[in-house]
Image (cartoon, rainbow, N blue to C red):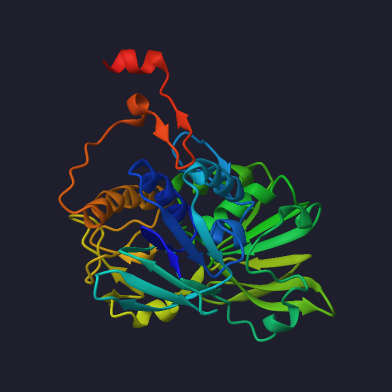
Length: 353
């Protein structure tokens, strides 16, 4: 039996940052994740994808963000159960929870924080008859290693942030990048849309809208795709390419967590965002992309905020009646579980005083 103060389901960015915030409160954390390494989607799906909305980082690769978060929480000595999926949960008479994994590993904690991101997921695939014949033969649904597209002709389909961001990134890697979207309007950030338009004007990205990829051609590897322009009289033509990357998002599934008695809405866990992101079951919280509430934004930085408030509530559950006085780390420094201490710079303390 693995015992801890806060049991975190999901070792993505939100789960990792929870370890740091809990550590400031002298609370121990253990994380469970079905993936074989920490980082969630940032490590498994797009480690080389640039992220632009992390405070203090104008741009940071998803994999690098994971490394920074691991470095930040290392001092608080979190435990990890990786490559195992959280399957069942049981509440004990003493108020604690026992979570058992797919490999029968048992974990016990008074607080459970579900930070499972989108849950288990699979890519949404375009309706092209022979697309399965070319999977891993020039058709990829996610980009793990951008260098494989070096000096290649790449076609990306999609209208969201992933399609826009990867088109921008690969414009300096591939010999030719073509972005195809079925509408003239994109769903991504305005800055990214403007950047794509700028690269189109410079001749670094071919932009085709409104259109769809309706066919794939090749033998043992993709050699061309068929594009159909949306119009009163649709027109089809071929584009030679080495890779076709449809980025239509992921189809999320909560998996076994959906059977834990939690209140679910549109495949997300409802929480009380007015207070502490607790679910309908006291002691179980949901933070990050896995939760939902009025005005919810699925952003990593929002998950960081939710984790911070959740840890404050967890402290009260674990230490009933004990008052915690919030101290700024710029003044108090950071005490790790290993006994080390990082002091705040004296000039910072003096300025605050």
